[in-house]
Amino acid sequence: MKPTTLHFSMTLALSPVAVVAASHDAKSEHHGIAAASEAPYGRAADPARATRSIAIDMSDQLRFTPAQVSVQKGQVVRFVVKNSGQLQHEFVLGTLPGLKEHAQMMQKHPGMEHDAPQMAHVAPGKARSITWQFTESGEFYYGCLVPGHFEAGMLGKVLVR
Image (tube, rainbow, N blue to C red; front, side, top):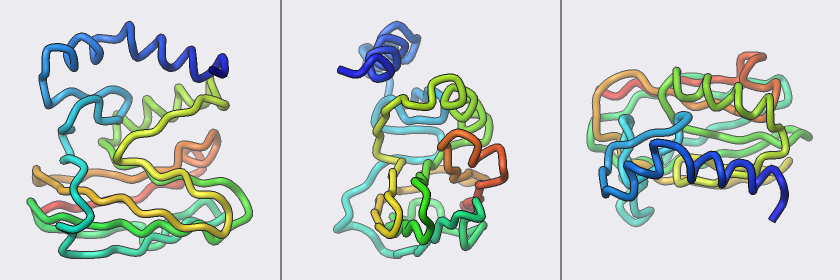
């Protein structure tokens, strides 16, 4: 196990999220990442249940296209995320405070490896998809948390009505 992976694993294991997850509370969140089956902005969904696909492009200009999407509460959406650049990018769904906190952690631990249902790490020239059900109305976000990208404005918005 890499030291950065070990550090993240230890941080998560010692966090209140681990205690909450152990008590089977399905509404916990840590650094904008769903720690259990449901987050304030929804939950991972079966790709076969997707009623809509949304293409998102990530560029080396550190922007998402489109920068804003609208979905219906309860809708299951497949995000098809393409990296049209030459740099590594990622697509992470979350709340704005959660994404900001996670981006700060990534600045301190740039080699940290992590994976969760609401994130896709996408190599240059590749595409990945995630399927998500938005269970609450509101404004949620997607960001690239590769160190420096979020801070440069690589952020998009999901309006859930």
